[in-house]
Length: 268
Image (cartoon, one colour):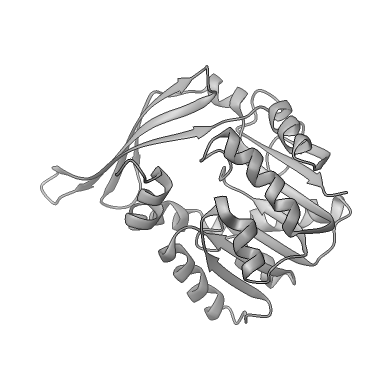
């Protein structure tokens, strides 16, 4: 990793095969989550129109939303993930009129969408804690930029980790079996001054004799928010607050026990 590279570029562009199994393992859940997004749009008075799936990954929300009748644009940093998403969309018989995918940096999404003549979104969704990866200042700028791509009355739906819950169940050390042979060792700490989680992610392949072969060691950092912090940031960027929920599936009030929080806003 060079001084100029962000950790997202290293993981999602140079070593996307290490993260791919995590997305694949959540592919089935994506259909249920997309259905909940559709319900949120309907309950919030939104239109069944054009949706931007920001940091769409392999399309696990984009494809189900398109099959429900939405016109969907998926946008992600990883070339591999976009290729997988396109292949899946094609296998489901979804053409370019219904579903389109673009590769690009989320920090430049507004200008890229303008260049591609993609705009007028009726809903913009950012799921699976994609917000926070570049820090609070970039999140604020992104939220302002997204207004440029939003149609009047566009809904913004953000899903991210709930800071309060994270601190209650914080684990400084964790080992995760990502696939049959791939292991992830996570050494984490919480930076209270910045409200960020800072992790050393160490990927290993388990060889037939049981030894672990190092594949990648990566320092990652992400801003985590409380509901009121996320509300202040979105309204400060020009969005109007609609509601907050303690999770996407079976949403209820946000509490300290809610692992994730969902924020719904509208462009006036």
